[in-house]
Image (cartoon, rainbow over all chains, first blue to last red; front, side, top):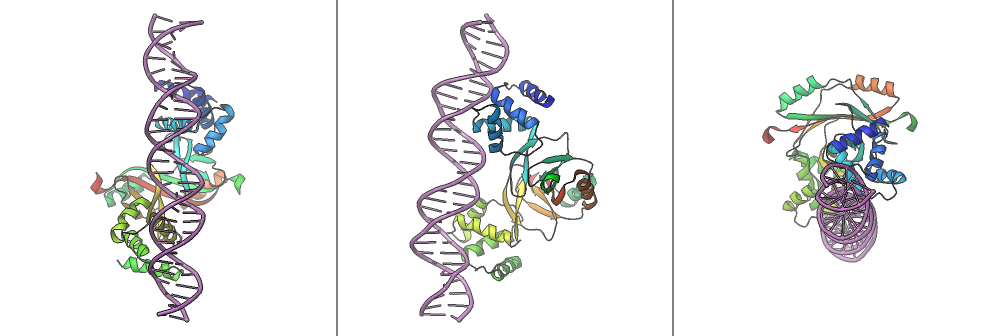
Length: 139
Length: 139
DNA sequence: ATCCTTATTGATAATGTATTTCATTATCAT
DNA sequence: ATGATAATGAAATACATTATCAATAAGGAT
């Protein structure tokens, strides 16, 4: 719940206004460990704020994404879900069943990436390491 | 160009017929090192086969995907592009500018993945390691 | 507390992408 | 050549996302 307030503060600092619809979406996203589609967010958020429009969900998710609080998640079958962002650079593991997501760190790919970069002439800007599978509950 | 014939042979072996539209799409995909969207494939393929319909592009890309000749590619901003498939399990590096893609191998994440899996209780089914950046020409 | 500016909202329409349907056409084994 | 049927493309449909715009609400100024 502390996250909710922190997100709203940041939103306000960046010139945004705190509104009912935004509060509902922020509460949802800040406290969920699952990747959710815009429509799913829409359905869940209407429990808190029944007048919520789907367009507002899209706009708010994009705003939160610009603030770095939320990020788009890519999965083998599609890639239109959103999830609270990682703390710094972490990697992601997602359950194909329920969308439950866990961030983890501890890898060290930098040397490897450096090597590939040198060999290919590519300027590497980011990388994804993502694990797909089923969580405890789903298997 | 040898790939074109190999793809068409495989397509035939699997019960498909070799047609003008399919030949145009296969020539394109087998000889391109870029990730292309269905619409992009459509535009390029019409140069070879003007009557081409967009629906045929979707169907053919899906067929080629089932044959393992082509695969969907995910990028930060979107994820509905297709690229000739890797040889076995390889990782991908994509240019954000032009879509140019390079496969590479040589990592060994298995121990790391095993560890994460044990700690979390997840049953890991697949993983992605993907590098994003700009190719030589684009920077 | 009230007013005022303006960000935000939600209904609607528009767009763009992907899928389904179906009559026509083309492939290829015979 | 012929015929069974796979494949095609046009049209219709479904679906997700974006743009438009008048009405509303937030929050600073008074």
